[in-house]
Amino acid sequence: MTDLLSDDERKTLIAPLQQTGWDYDREGRAISKTFVFADFVAAFDWMTRVARIAEDANHHPEWTNVYKTVTVTLTTHDAKRLTHKDIALAQDMDKAAQV
Image 1 (cartoon, rainbow, N blue to C red):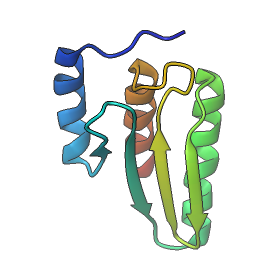
Image 2: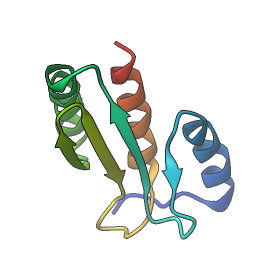
Image 3: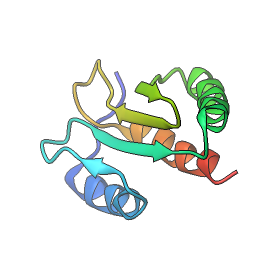
Image 4: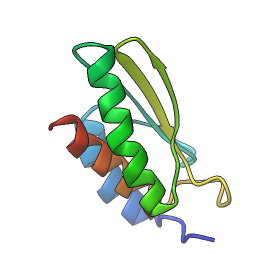
């Protein structure tokens, strides 16, 4: 199982994500964000890039796609809480959206 985030790590690592639009479940179980792209193709291209990143990290998001909108929830299911894997994938998703 992946190590859980400590209280200090949560405060330090979640704050920058909140500035980019991520919402934080105060119970420490998940973070979520809605990404909106120019059109369906742009959204799907982003999902394809992120799918490769997620597969390499063996950490897969919960997400839905409707036209140009992708809603993402990240949590580490075996830990039932946020871990470093979630933070890293959220950061990678934000970077991929800026391409």
